[in-house]
Length: 75
Image 1 (tube, rainbow, N blue to C red):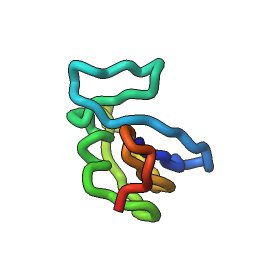
Image 2 (tube, one colour):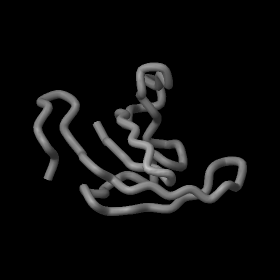
Image 3 (cartoon, rainbow, N blue to C red):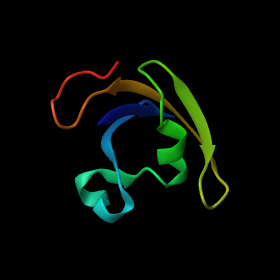
Image 4 (cartoon, helix red, strand yellow):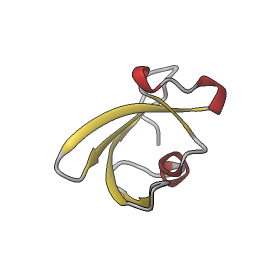
């Protein structure tokens, strides 16, 4: 589970999942989407920029990363 702050100060929490488990309403996004790939390996406090499929530049900062199964903070 990843909590991120997007431009404008809005916080969003979601899970990075295998493409077969995607459910946008439940906050599960694919690790193969542009934002999913951009987030892989980031830790709290790190920021990333990526381009969405429509070419729009996006930026977010990771606020919290936790293991979806145990609920513990990831290192």
